[in-house]
Length: 393
Figure 1: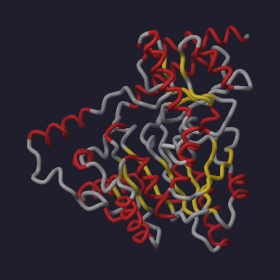
Figure 2: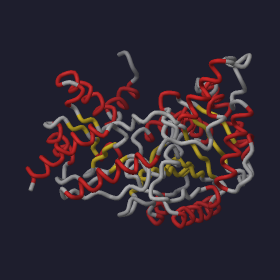
Figure 3: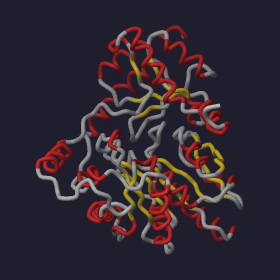
């Protein structure tokens, strides 16, 4: 056998997102790229903001001596300081470079954090619907995923989380704006969650961390303000990337930020630096660290995503689909018109439309679609949605 039983089992349960993406690639080969409407993958077609290319060109034309050498495993001091300064502006908290570790994207950041805090058998609470890879990340480091459903609005259900917390609970995961729902967690819900975790940590005599996955933090619509979780709970760790706010998913650049109010933060940071090295990341990409040091206040054109959301939401709801209203990110999570969403998704495939089943996010009966695609893809997909809706009427 070429791979371990553990990996084989994980592969069999692997991400529905990737499965649908691969099915889309096969359909494109069969019918042509312009005849397939793939809404399965959150792979932004939007180009990075102009500031990115300007910074990259400056580095390429006059590189600093030693640009491509090793650096401290936490990342360049100036990059970490720039991230800290941006977070201080956003949160009002006194972040410094000492609370930041640069990482290989948000996925790398999450794995580094979990490696740092988990002992075998420790439980990590995931709120469904959740990003499909979370369970594999937890398993990577000997943890056990404990899935808790969100409420009817896809917001954290505080009572359900409290019921799930036990003597082995080590962390609670949140993701806002959420993939796949687009829900933005309000400040009052985060405050209640922080109060719960503070009480439970005290009662159990065990530190429970709140891990906030935030790659969509700056992709927010309708003039809303992002409610940072740091002020509500000291044992907060943010894992994030510039994959979405700067449209750089292929560059794998992100960071970990530990709450400056957490008294044991330097030990935690030291653990993350060590994990960054031994997991084989070693350090975040050198060139991208030098680029994003100048881009902490830049984003893609979020209004373009809002325009796509509005067009898609109005069209789908007009056809009779039940669609929770996304407040951020670039996903929708409609309810399937039939109980088994795989049946519905297979009907859509007859019209070369690809979406991801909700069971891949721990929530059967729904499906996710991504609208970070070209307009013609959305328009072509709507024809398929309309035909399936009429067929089921």
